[in-house]
Image 1: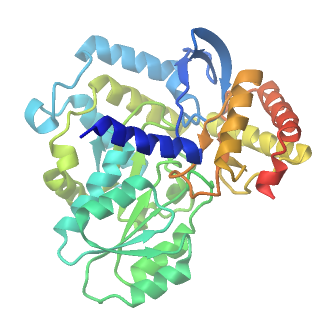
Image 2 (image 1 turned 45 degrees about the horizontal axis):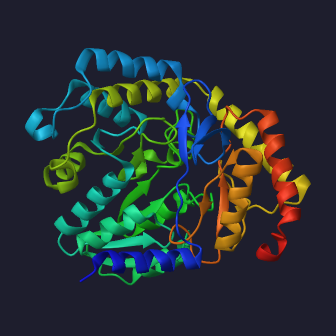
Length: 404
């Protein structure tokens, strides 16, 4: 059997639908963010990156870089294996204490990515709690969906951010069944924010555990960067808060926080923790310093909000439609995969602006978009240039037909 032909046929289908993903080859330049070098066809082009999830530019922050370099010199480059075999590095424990403090929880547990922390935690909870029912927001991330699926627990999907639908579905479930309400704070594609207080109140009413993904909020919201739950004074009422180190904190890794017994339960039973190599100590050290910095410094958050507001105002003046929300994410809707890719290519080739086209399966078909994430390091000139480019290409490419 010609397996390569089978593979190629499915790839060709993706291409014909406009959903094939092309990856830009970028080289980040230390101290130059959000500017980078794009390598393509043997040529190098300077570009401005507009879709990075390094939301505050902390991956370029001197104190974070210094902490990583110091830890590499002190401990070397790798962790040496899994934590249960090779030992838990001191830097891992220091970081977990910092994360527990960030979310006002008793304990925290590190994972190699936010995807893995969601997958491992939800799959473990769902499979180990007998008769567990997980109520999942319909807009939840793929990592949460996969974790729930892998758990083989009963799954109930409730309409996105619809508290009345959540309550109706909770009310229909057996009173004595363990129930988990799983949702996010900031949804990364539309940039909308969950009504956390109402969700928590309903979950408490029906005795359900709350599982909150704060991946796109940690570092960015709340007085110390604890996320939307901190901003709204709700951290103590949420059973488990999950987050990432790979976005606003500028490094890599994922984590959960909660009670000591909850984190020990996940540590003891989650295959995604037990059987995988631990984060390098240098990554843990850099993440800890990044978290500590953003607990006390609000300047990055304030500057980012100013730049987000300026971009939205510029898009409004230029007549470029974008989804309104209360977050830092600015989605410009194109609603056609081919035109979305075409526009992204024009921005890169003609204007030196990099933004990745977002298409299926990341978003539903017919909702394709360009997703912009202004950072505190994008200058006013960067914003004006982006708006000028979009306004010019919007007219040239008849994009209006795609968004009508």
